[in-house]
Amino acid sequence: MTEHVEGFEVPLHRALTEPILLAGAPRTVAIVNGTLAAALGLGLRLWIAGLLVWAIGHSLAAFAAKRDPQFGQVLSRHLRHKGWLEC
Image (cartoon, rainbow, N blue to C red; front, side, top):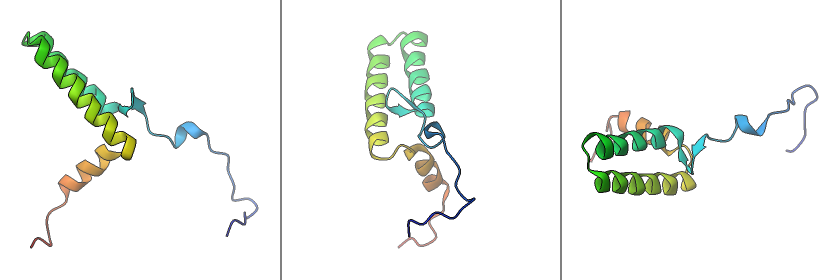
């Protein structure tokens, strides 16, 4: 099953297949987490709460991305589906 058909092969750059991560977490999740932490720390002047939100949120996002780098898309799709077959 590893036969290659002539004319149906194309070189693909590695950057096109790997997810975009920011310090181990998906880029969009890291930006939202950092924005929320900055709003707490700078806007509300709750420095410790902002640092805790950032550290815990980023650690959880990096842990989830280690298991599945596209967990954000999977979670959003899961939340959009209705429970048709609920017990």
